Image (cartoon, rainbow, N blue to C red):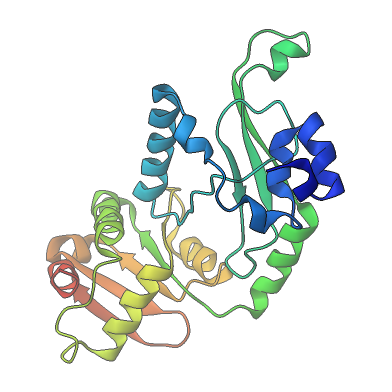
Length: 247
């Protein structure tokens, strides 16, 4: 692109910091066909990027590769990222990246690092709005003797959560609602000695819709006891049946 085709800010940026041109809202249409940065990665950079993407997928975290993303600081040496709340895809609440030489450049020992900054006011606003948000997702609670089974259930749910529902016309309405909640979000208690009532309070306070309750009986029978925190409804579902519905 010739200078005459760019806005005044981009003409200046072209001399001082060409990457910042990608941030321009005025010239964005003119930049649609520019070469993408991933076409110029070395093999090591490509492997690192693919590894990060694999980790995100393994944890069922939604992400989008944005090859034109530009951060405002020049010391980044690798991957950069931004986090968004699902309700607002325009304003990042967290952003950062990899910087391997910054500490050494400032006079310290070589210290490869990854860091980020958080928009405190935005995060605070989202937290305040949680009380106005509908319940969603599934939280897995368990007694100590059901810990191994609980993590098997957690792993299984993550593996099948995006599969289509089989037997569409035979499935019970509360099963369907439970499965849809699995697709929203899944979490599990990570404090093995937290009491059962404390786990329920945690799930309730964070607006989960369903709580899976696992104890000795559930382990023996290989089923899930499920409580709907939106009401008083409770039901049981065999783990094998849940798997078969999403196969």
